[in-house]
Length: 523
Image (cartoon, rainbow, N blue to C red; front, side, top):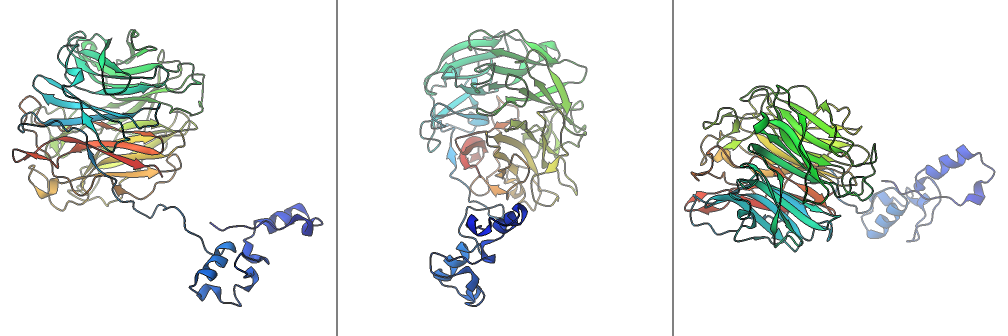
């Protein structure tokens, strides 16, 4: 950026306004200007300052607006991987009860993310819940033992959710439980993220699945403090449904968002970030991202966004682009409805939505590439609060080729429009991945960021430190085709909180699934 020098006004009072403006906006080097080191900008050529390599010449060139002083790194600079922290640090006795994956991470708005809670699936004995917290901004984590969500609501079957409610100054988290109708949504509450108490049943259901949660933390919203949980209700044929609560104790009856012959998968509920000016209406807009999976297998997919302006009562929807080919190498041998990224990643291309300022809505997802590439990360956004959508763009920057698969993206955005998209990445692979021990199965957690609400994107960089060994899944109590179905990231206080399934740790000679965390500075 060139530095300009405003010329004193009295010398130009007789000049027309347009001429004066042109002079003021010209680089300072075009006019006489004495610098702080005693060199006049008019002397740049006569003194051959551009050839000199001393600090005095450099300072003069900076002040004259000819060269740029030191500044923050820009898009061409790749930042180093941030410190990786193990979240799921429960000691495992063997590889048969050590599956930690499917992560949701949230920071407290009360202390600007100093306290962080991660809720995830952790199969241990007859329950599937794991919860960890950090009180130092993610430098260290402690897994709560015994798991706090393993009691009070019957058997816990995972599918984690967690939010921090700024209005109530309280954490809410939950999973699918037998004590809430057989397969409903049970909740727990906490004032500090460390100690938890039994909460309400958000929904008493017999076939709830893949629930997600969001809280309206914007104080100027007409629904400030309202919490929303979206889910598929397979007691009603998989209906895409939502419930909400202002206090976490009493919950609304379900509102069916979509119950057509076309099954719409619940991907994630979200809404405007705290501090964002509403684009329309008096309430924060609620969004539910969903996917038409085309009947499963490798059928083409389509992304659909539902939105509500009245706190979840009524809904409209928009299609986020044309149908696209499915990500994946094969079909899960245990259930051919689901596609898989070899060797065990069950994945249909699901992503995550996020909302920035000025009515911009972000969504990233995975789809098949070209030239034998089984997965790329694509990004699509809306500039009018989810009414219409721009054409999708590819985010991963490697050239399409066999074995170089990207999958399972997560998205976060803050009130300033700083967006982070992270995903699993095998761009370093040169051989196929079929079995867990194949060299081509190693991967990284990779990311790209935007500092202008998704208009431009900075350089791709690694979030995980080095290549990660592919984890196995030898737990007989969990489907063999599974390494977590999602990883939901968040942004707070100038950082993106990123979690992922990591296979670096071996137990009994087998690389197992663990949850790792990184705090990624926003650009």
